Length: 200
Ligand SMILES: C[S@@+](CC[C@H](N)C(=O)[O-])C[C@H]1O[C@@H](n2cnc3c(N)ncnc32)[C@H](O)[C@@H]1O
Image (tube, rainbow, N blue to C red):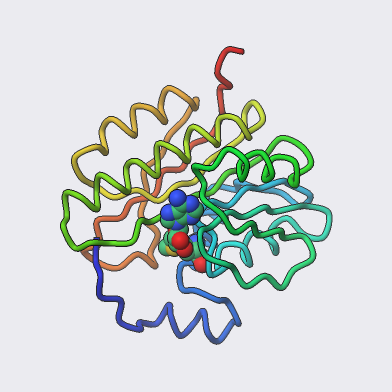
């Protein structure tokens, strides 16, 4: 997990297009490649601050859709079809509020969650894996049958266990790296489609 983030061409492109973060380019690319959402769709965005992914998702779903974001930090939201909740993903009250505000089952859940990095690789990887497990569990409660999930992960100790959990929850799983990811970065994106809801 790289701590130093120099301003590269994606940073400047994000700024030129008025997007709040360079992370927006990665999602833009994944949505275009995998056709994960349509106009009118419902999306939950986990770890949404400062709001780069929210801006891309809001444009993809259009005025008839809705995105609900969750983050510990406040987000900058400029679109009428976006609701950003400030709170902890692990808080059941925040989860319940997100589901209510979405107004129906999600077509897509996205997760760009990252812990505050300590610099100790093993600890950071473990905390990142813990967040991703929580994201998957919540996604399973929020997603419609056959819905999709896109999640950032870091290669490391728990990666095999996490990808196995995704494979059990979805019919298809693709591991991919967007071009906007930094060369040498340990990050990888899970693109999971065909949600199989847990037995009720
Ligand atoms: C890489 S940033 C997200 C960037 C965002 N996707 C964008 O495009 O602007 C990761 C985010 O995960 C959030 N996060 C970490 N742990 C969280 C938790 N338990 N609940 C909610 N958000 C969390 C952090 O506050 C941080 O804003």
